[in-house]
Amino acid sequence: MKRNILSVVVGLATAIITFLIAETINGNLHPAPTTLDYKNTIAIRAFYENQPISLWLLVLAGWIIGSLLCGFLIKLISKSDNKKLPIIAGCILTLSAVANFFSLPHPTWFIVVGLLVFIPSTLLGHKLYKLKSNGQ
Image 1 (cartoon, rainbow, N blue to C red):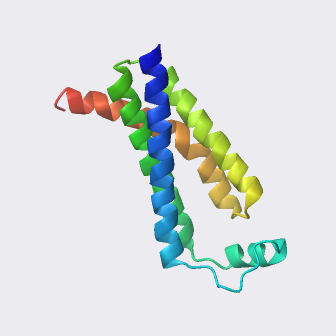
Image 2 (spheres, rainbow, N blue to C red; image 1 turned 135 degrees about the horizontal axis):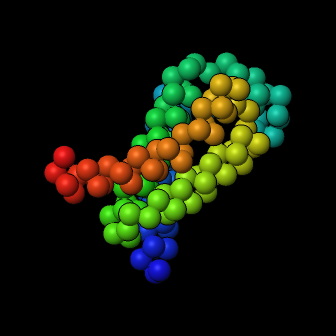
Image 3 (tube, one colour; image 1 turned 120 degrees about the vertical axis):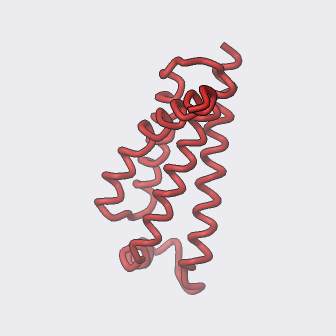
């Protein structure tokens, strides 16, 4: 039981660190103007609405890679084939994305895709460990 909890915590922490790395890269590639007032919701909305698709694709790539790592580490640490663990982690990551959707403006297509990436990605990461350990 402790190993299962630890695996989910480590997986989630790794996913979050991966997300932060992607966001940092994005901030360097697409910096906000120094004059942007983060308290002005209209200015924030205008800033995000005018961002190139590459900004949103990099965020999605970070989310997918982080979720894959999360599922992989869950399997590595828990040593369990139990798919409930990566599903739980995927649900937690999805809920964190929902909170993000409420805090900052996002394109509709990004919200739809964002809601769909976490659970399949954590499950795939979980399965990839099995493939790696079987030498396939």
